[in-house]
Image (cartoon, rainbow, N blue to C red; front, side, top):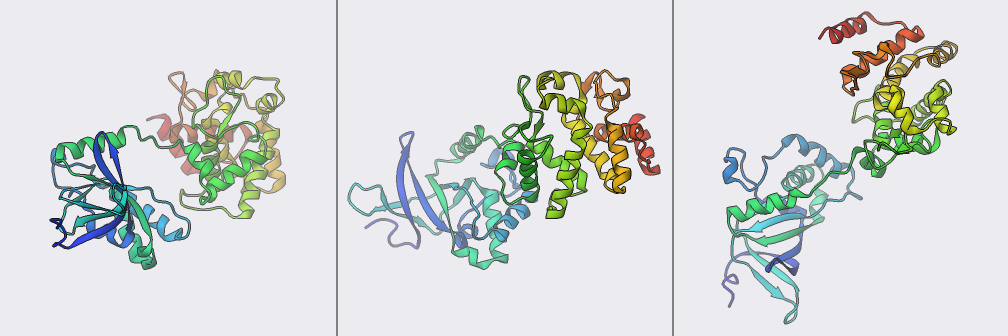
Length: 361
């Protein structure tokens, strides 16, 4: 008789595998059990005695909301855990790697990767109890002590690379800001054909001018939206019309579109080829949208006269810092103020005070 058969156990359908000469088990676990059986180290335990990072509680509400708001199409990747107890694997057939994994209920099961998923699942089930019937994959290893668990954490995270903001925007079909950025990038000037969809920086020899993540952020600035706010159809049309109208009065953009100026040369010489230019023009656009159509058109026409060359002294200490472009919010604001002056937009007392504070900082 197995030493576990007389004890109370969790039983998981599982597949047995092998890595580095050691067995591991891939199991499915009901979400309702996740908060009960998986532990994570308490924050007050010194880092040298932990096998995980400290739980970042600020991440949990957003992850839980994702589960609650997408109960029919969410995706959570597998949790990786170490079992600090003797286990049994009951094969379906002799010499089979398919069977049931028996884990004592009093075993310490420590999460090596996925503690934030665990906490988010716990919170989401409180709001949507029906989620408790769903399952998540769990990769189980047999615990070999603290040093091994710490090494597993390091190894699991060593090569983990978050997708770039542009690629995340490209593939995010729930986020309305991402939907709007994709729509503009594929359908409107100046973005169609000139958007980098995968990276959030543009290579020196690239033929692209804008990053998808930059377009997404510029739309938020243009329409005064926070990071969690969406966009309706009217706002989508407003954004599309603004960028299309602006494009007419950006001669260097048009030269690149007509292949009269290379994208590489444009980026090398002009601030309007960079994110700071796009974000500053979005800030200007936010003010322009408050004007009547006729007045807005007059101001847009004046943008065609702006000297966007990096060598223009007007951009010193605004877009440029020590001879280099700066993407800091203060520099975006200062650049937008210069554009507003050049096209005769009224400046609020608060904005002028803010400008002086930035310039004298």
